[in-house]
Image (cartoon, rainbow, N blue to C red; front, side):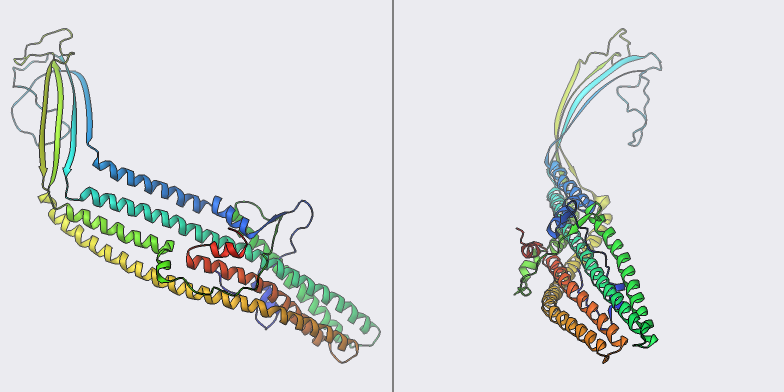
Length: 467
């Protein structure tokens, strides 16, 4: 979240280098105006991180459909035709997938080839798994919830980054205007002092002091303009388009103070960050239930129908021609199969211990997330109140600085003040101008941070007059 940035009373030197600044927005009928609300909408629609999070959300939702498919009976169809010899032999082979299985009795050795054909269907339905599929489905749903809330959290973060980048450009432009005004005043003052020095009415050192002050002001302006280019680049990245030709509008501030009351604990539990972490806890718990249910047997109901044809008789007589290309022997069968993974128990026990620790870790992360949200919300509320209070004070300081600068000029003209007094008054005025502009920006920055802390940008949108 953005932090309030206040300019030090040490002078505009540090302020101009710390805050990005730029020339005033391009004027003219061709310039397009981009408001803060519009910038948020553009980034929310088109920033790649948001689009990627949305695709991950869609992918996670498809994972739920895949988990539901485990409840559907598995139906497998097979058709095969081949031409081969029929030499068989007695003996045992462990289960493997390389050597063809034996079919029929052992016959005298011969190499005559015959056609063979077969087709069949096998239906396999897991009738009872003691909650394994349900736990997997719950885990998939929780994963989809994580992806959904991560998407919302990504949107919040992108809008917060966009708001800060937009406001940084506004602050930069305001600081450039302040630096430019300062340079113009110092330039006019240097010319005035030069005239006095040339006419022997002021000491030559005052002319040097005035020239040095103007040069320093120019340096500040150059640095501020350089900072603006960097801030514009950041905003362009978030919006996906150049911003040099856009006029950014400074949102109008109202007199309302900060949030009256912070959301309660229940509202914070609905924050996308808290929701995403809660879903992770649920996901890990579902995985643990699936592991625990894996200790129980699995009951499958099976049904099969098949047909075969062979070009050789059971006694090995080759029937010739196209014999074997027709399916003439049919079989069917139904049954139940119980699987108990005794050999997997040591692995399952280790997985249970590891998953239990993972559940506890995610629960601890959830508790930490809630604490951090409470801390962030309290800080964001204080930041809003501080920023708005500061924004109400800076116009008064600006008015006082302008009055002091005018009075010092009058005193200098009367010979009661030195060039140092004037340059100090000019620096104070430039600083007050920058502080006033930055204070307005800091209010919006604080409201952006408050929106992230509450998990909803509706507060900022309401301040902008949007629905």
